Image (cartoon, rainbow, N blue to C red; front, side, top):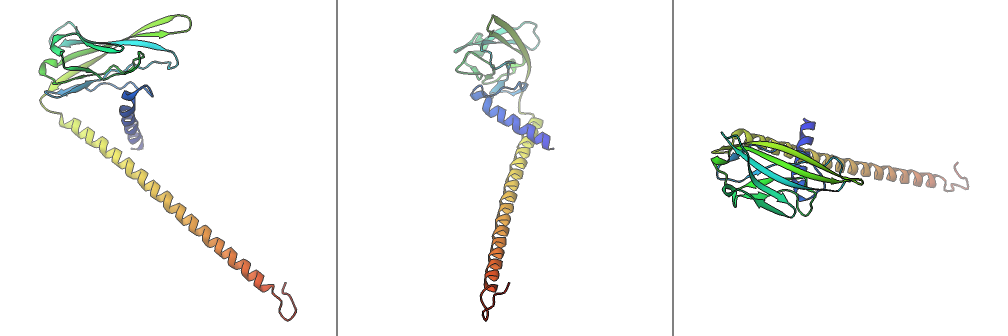
Length: 220
């Protein structure tokens, strides 16, 4: 149970942090079920194996409609501008990947106003150039996403999201309880220290009092 909760927290941190920049990279598969009339994020991530090596990349998206055999080129991102290359997607595709750098590692795009005609296979391709000290290395990475368009969200997906939120809440509550326990332990510890200090002070006072002269004789 603890490993599951830790994994969920790590995934949440990644989803929040990675789109903002290159502070981290993890290759997470795209979701595959979109709801008609809504927006959908086509995920595509290709992490560099050596972060210290400078590089640049362009990202191409191709689409093969269900029941057909050929891919059509629908989108390209080449720093700093994205380009929509097919009329059926005009005004509906939006770049959601890496910004402000040629060193692209996140190649996600959003499809707005999804239709049933968007069902099919999407191919994401990174054309990456690594600038090594001696020469340039060219690498091509491709990933496919099988997209299904449905009328409404799958209840199972909603249940998964609810379960994730439940785990997150459990973790937060456990952290809160640990904080309370630490606070109570510290308070009890400080009170015990103060009590021992008072006892020591009283013992010291008694010892001093016992050494006061009595009929000219000191008690040893």
